Length: 141
Image (cartoon, rainbow, N blue to C red):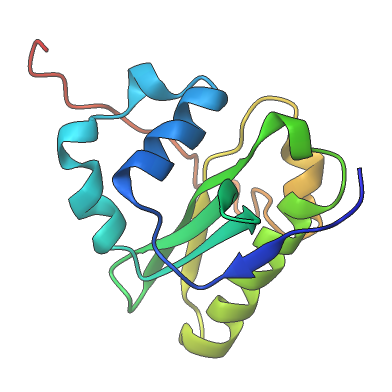
């Protein structure tokens, strides 16, 4: 498949986000009742379109001062292997290099098998005394 897509600095609609999440098996892990607010509160967002169809996205979230996280780097399964994930990451990292202050912490969660992809962007465990963990709030839903 050739690279024929457009990367736009734009927030996906809730329906576009749901569609991408369903394609990559994330639907059971996202609370779509509040996802639209989460998307709107993003610091920087890009979407990828082939004609008018959404085929990828990525976003930067955080406090906008010290802590930033790269979130939701999603590529439609039919468009993998053509450099789209790299193009998305390039846009996100470019934004951070231009806008984040010196010593800003930029984190991300890495899907299984994708660590080498993110190493190209210098995402590694640099300090032996920091270990990334997380929890999820579950209110019985």
